[in-house]
Every structure is written in structure tokens, then in C-alpha cells.
Length: 488
Figure 1 (cartoon, rainbow, N blue to C red):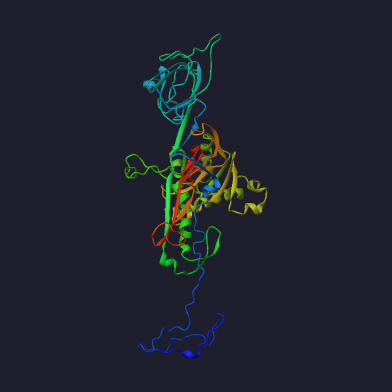
Figure 2: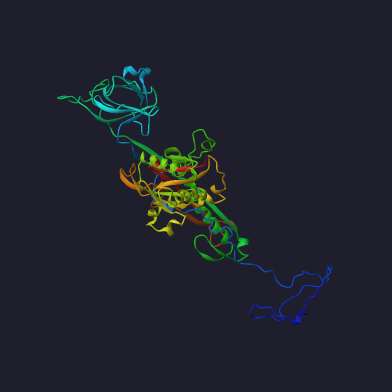
């Protein structure tokens, strides 16, 4: 193979510059083995800087905005939430369908908001609501009893002789007061079978729990590859920049693991009894989506076309729950635009031309159609895009169906709950992460090296292993104040 210039005329340069006497030219060959050619005069042009074609690829950050992280030392976290203060029963029926009998029946013994017994007393006054035909009656309770899980009350309507006009099923009743005669007194309950006396209401609570799951990951690079360094200039998602070689992959493994820490408590699912996961020994953990589906509110198919009417229905439902004044909306792109379109319609004067008042009478602010905050009724809402719902590698690649999750409404602030471990009332963010930790070991986010390369000398493995571990779960308190937006 011929070399041009001749070997003795090659002179190395002290700087990286192209000169006539400091390069080797492989050319003019015909493949005869004696004058082979590579058809290249210079080395290939290689960009050492990595192209960020997907921008910031990390998905975590949601829980840092709305919650907190706190340690715990047990396999389970248990908390109790208050039930409603006033006495009300749904799904009430007229006994045997006899409207003239003036007797109502309902089932007791449920959980959650349902009382475990009949606590309506004689001489209390109730409202009977019939949503089937928009009819109501007010009545005095003349008898109250319970047999097993069936409660029966006899009533005396104030406005008519019997229950005529009511449906026989699907009624709701609630206590609004009482009326006792002159000189009367309350007979305290003296034992089982006493159905005429006053019933003392013992406050009840609903208990919830969740268990942490262990999340692990590992990155391995063998000793031989560590000895062959190829530099890559990177700008990482955690805000650092510079040159990496084999640790480039380790850096991405760490970022991916940090995303898993959040994704696992957002998407987490409990292993149902008899499920394949339970059979395999997994217990699972209840994540945000599962908790809101189980104990919260679901709004299906919110669109710009449904607009203010659909949104007001959400507010009316919030009124029946905790009515938390400040709320945050974490939405995917389409739902976020639907909210913008709804608010833009208001600011255009469609609601009487008063839209500019929402923006301190600034027309320029009103014309900025990327609304980040607004007030409706007695509620304040702060809207932001949730990257997790937009990313094509996660929820963003899911078709808009009934199973699609398009956003979540999260109440701001804190809630007061009874902590079973501490034995006292505590204030916690509605969303917060609990992780296993003690004086001996903190499992919030552990990272360690094993192997015999890269500074690790723990085994005879010719590699470096970077290990990651965490054990955590999510507490979704007062889930009745959350709203999950799903596809149509």
C-alpha cells in the first residue's frame, strides 16, 4: 500500500491543523493488495455533542409540586378519615309500596359514608326527597326501629295525611331537627329492643391503608469496556453538563429510576385476591389513579364543546364533598386546550362582555389564551400541563378512549387525619409519599457500587454494578375531593 507523502517527509504538527506534510493519504489503489485505498483523505467528521432530539425526557416532578415525602418505619401506613356530620340515608323505599302506611325502610350496615345502624330517633324531623319526580315532604318521626340490617321509621307528614305523591323507591331522607311536646323528656336507650328512645350517635370514621413496594434497578459495565474511553459531551436532564464516557448510560439509568419512583406511586395497583400477581407473591400498592377511581370522582369526556356547563357540574359535585377552595389541574395537551377554549369564550364577551374583569380589566392579558389560573364560583384553579400525560412513551401514546386518563384535579393545602401509629391528629398534604427509613437504614433513594471495577472492590466480578433501590408508597387522603378526567 503506497503512502503519500513519503514516510520520511511526514512532519507532525504541534496543533490540530491541516498541513500538506502532516497527513497520510490512502488513495490511488486498485484493490490489488499492494496499493489498497480507503478513499478517504481525512478522518470522518464526528459530532461529539449529543443531539437532544426529545428535549427534557424526564417525567418526574408532579409529586414535588403537590406533595411531600416523609419517612415511616412499618410495612403499612394507616390513616383514618372523618365521615359526614349529619344523618342522611339514600336508597330509601316505602315499606311494601304502601304509601298510606307511612313507613319507610332502608338498609344499614354499610361502610364509608353509610352509618352502620339506624340513628334516627323518635320525634326528630326529616326531609324526604324524591328525585324521581322532583317532590319532597317534611315529616315527624313517630317510630324508629331496626331488625338486622333493615331499618324502619314511621313518619307523620306535616303537609298531608300520608306519603301520597312520593315514589316507592329511590328516596333520600335527612334529619334537620326535632319537635318534642311540652313537658316531654328524652328517654335514653336502655338496651337492645328499646326502639322508642333517643339514639346517641357515636362518631365513626373510615380507615384506609397502603403498603410500600420495593423499586430496584441496576446498571452494569464490564471492566474491559471501562478501559476503552469514548467521550461524549452531554447536557443531562438534571441540569448538569459536561463529558461522560461509560457513565453516560449510568446517568440515564439513574434518571430513569427517578422517574420510576414517581410513576410507580401514580400508576400503582393493589394485587386483587386471586389475581395472577397475588398468586406470584406480589401485593402491589395503591397509586394515585387507582385511589381516585376507588374513592374519588371521575369526569368522562370533558371537551371544549361541553364547556362551562360540564365544568359547573364538576363544581356542584365538589360542593357536596370537601369544597376545597384552591385546586390544581394537571392536564394533557388536548384537555388543557379545551380549558383554554372554554375560558377564551368567556373572555370574548359571550357572558355579557365582562370577561376582562377576570384579568384586572387588561385586554392584553385576556388575549393571552394560555390561561394558567382562573376562578369560578368560590373556587380557584391553577392549570398546568402534565408531561407524563403527553409523553409518547407513557400516557401520551394512548388513544382517547374511556380508559384514557386526560388529567387530574388535585386539592391544594393539607388535610387533618388521625395517624394510627402516632396516636394523634396530624396535618398532611392531600398527596404525600411515605418511604421506609430508620436510624439504621434510609430507603428513600439508595445507590451503591459492587463488583471489582470502577473503584468497587466487593466481589471477583469483572464489572462495575451500580445499584438503585427505594421502598415507598403514596397516601391519597380525602380522595373524595379529587377529580380524574378520562376519555369519552
